[in-house]
Amino acid sequence: MESFIPVLTPIISLVGAILLALFSVTLKSRRVVDTLFLATTVVTAVMTGYVAYTVFRFNETLVYGSGGWLPPLGIVYIVDKLSATMALLSSLIILLIAVYSIGYFGGKEHGIHYLYVLILLMSSALIGIYYTGDLFNFFVMIELMAVTAYALVGYHKSKGEAVEAALKYGMIACLAGILLFLGIGFIYAYIGTLSIPDLSAKILGLPTPMNMFSGNTAVEAAPLLLIVGLIVWSLMLESAAFPLHFWLPDAHSEAPSPVSALLSGLVVNAGLYGLIRLFYTVLSEGRNAVSGLSVILDILIVLGCLGALYASVMMLIESDIKRIIAYSTVMHVSLIIIGISIGTKYALAASIYHFITHSISKALAFLSVGVLVSAAGTRNIRDLKGFAKLYPGASAGMIIAMLGLAGVPPLGTFPSKLLLIAASVGAGNIGAALIIIITSAIAAIGYFRIINLLVNEAPVKAGMFRAGRTIKASITILCILVVLVGLALPLLSQLSTSISGQLFNPTNYIGSVKGIIERFLGH
Image (cartoon, rainbow, N blue to C red):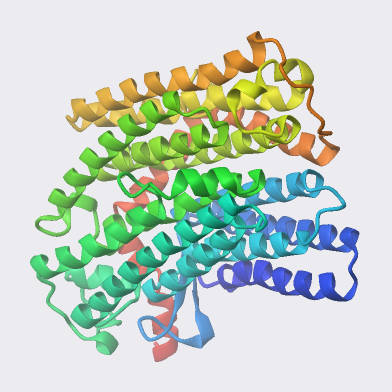
């Protein structure tokens, strides 16, 4: 189905960012800035919701040839079930972060419009990543996301630690960008196209009308695997997957808490989405597509298991609460990679489900801890003792987030972890299933350590932070969502399986552009 909505949706956030920058200079009104920021995130969420409704309700893939060009000559936007779900998840969490930020930074925050502009640019980049059907456009959107992330991490430029974390993040992400650019360049040199449906068709050996523009290219496994390895390495850097996670704890802990929620709950998803799109759309059907690809996936399973073990242990050692949550992100990224790499329909469905449960739980964790840290004036968990008595609302949000991330039934990540374990056993990978169980148990100790300090210890600091209505609203909604994503196991598992099933049928993605090409050719 052809529709201009996929290309319009990221443009809304981009236009909102431009208008916000202009109004903040000319009007200098905090009320106008807040209203425009919030309105843009609301419209974007409604648009992604409409796209997701259309894709799932009518079982249609939305397609738009940007600038009137058809694939593979021009950039095409393709929204399937995975794209629609990831974009909707991102826009909803960004909306809640926007509501939270209005109250969190207060009326006297200097330069707040800069932060709002960056968040809107981030929103545009994330939706562009999920909606694009072209590898070069994917690279451009990844770079836009990365550039805004550097600036957001270093938002408190008067803090040396924040600037250092931003520089470290910037250097690592630049390296990831270079590797991704080289990999995409090699793909174009080797296969002659950057259109994702065209690449998939060539690797599958399917003749399509796109061949008349990009030619019929015989794809050999060996050089393709070298290119795939390069791209996989860059995407692992973007998603902070072990052992390329080293930039994440500093970046996510030094950023303002709403930014930490954005980075840890959404930005890491972009690289993981890239892995899914690479393995199951470009290379088609995971392990079955190219001879030797299973070696890369086996390596990723091992790295996922090691990363989950390492991160769960680090959660017990750290005393900085934001770094504990950051290492929790490394652990959950590792679990998602295990599911992606197992290569079965049900393991992939479990990973997609885990995207949803982890993103919502992690956003709640960082937004809740933002109140607690602002009140205590420190990130040391020992100084948060007894804060459940002083800040019951934020503490309740923190406790629900910790229980959700720990996978305590029926909250948060419990159903997706359960499905990951079942899928691992079903695929005959008992070792991966045991790692998921063991690391979840180790991490639970870290989560319950935080809960114990909040609830069972006497306060050591009084705290001086007032959580306004917007903060309370965001935390309350996220608390409800953490409960709902756990209780909605039948519905969300069915949704995730539907998405996974579509990914295991790449001919659907390839055929989505047929209408554009036929109309262009006058058939």
